[in-house]
Length: 177
Image (cartoon, rainbow, N blue to C red; front, side, top):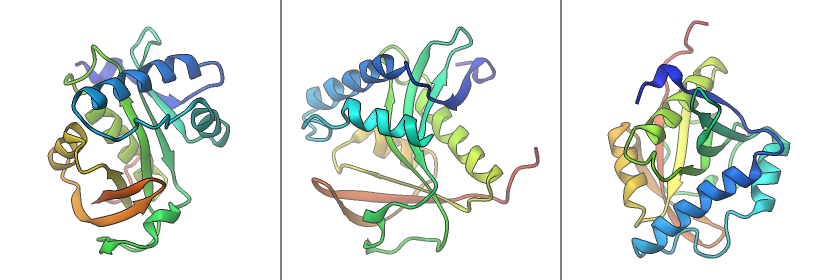
């Protein structure tokens, strides 16, 4: 994948249908793999609408504008991360990524990796020292991505419908503009 042709930006109103299509593809992939993650109607249209309204929803697009990945970035904390069975590697501010999904046809081509890298770059520019993610114990693609991108396993957190594995990556000092 030629990353120079990709755009990373906030999602816009009117893009929900494409985002939900991508999420539906991810749900089907998880279901086919036997995972319970995202099999209860989450994330739903209301979640994506709320992400976009808050400015948290982000997309990775091809040069022609086609959205190929979606995720929600939050810089104001995650309540379920306050209690962890284990320990975070950093204290203080962090970015958290939720709802990462990649379009069929783009999986295993670097889109998820690029989404993480662009998120980390944005966080560095904002002076945010850490990047946190949680996932289900059986989400093999995400677990592989965490290892590949050098996230550290920190422990387990409880979220809306169960326990999740929690990961963190320390970010280097802010990038120069």
